[in-house]
Length: 210
Image (cartoon, rainbow, N blue to C red; front, side):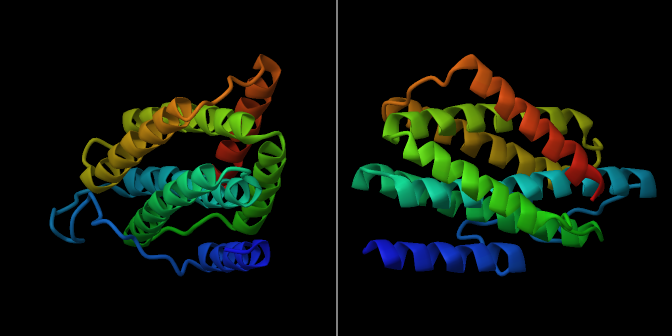
């Protein structure tokens, strides 16, 4: 695919992501809506909605990051790896979006900002070279894996649907990190890892409310 074509595809992905016009290729791990009777209180439903909104923002950012890193990848193999990971992240995006609808909640109002910022970071990471770009994937996915583990502890015990989605997402993120490591990722400097954690914390706190 020519460079211009890749940019057009990337722009189309951005529009679909922000418009919510995404569909999962894999079945939702939570099963069909209504398969399990839910007895969540209003407080539990509000908490679950806020946590799933944060997770949805994470998937919006993941789309932007992987699209940007695929555009800047120097190796066709790495470009294919990034594109494949982005497709799996599309499943996560669709699943979290569906769960938000079920909970009667909404996505973050700042999703265009999150997407633009993550895309810029992905371009910068890709410009550093393929091994550093892979290192960025490893650090990002490890942080997301820890973040999702924390959500599993915070989600209401009776919210089986959200928990099933988060558990599958956590497994996928760990696999993406492992694949990046095996592909030759370079460990990022500690100050950069700290900065990434700080940015993720800011996004999480903001998306929880807005």
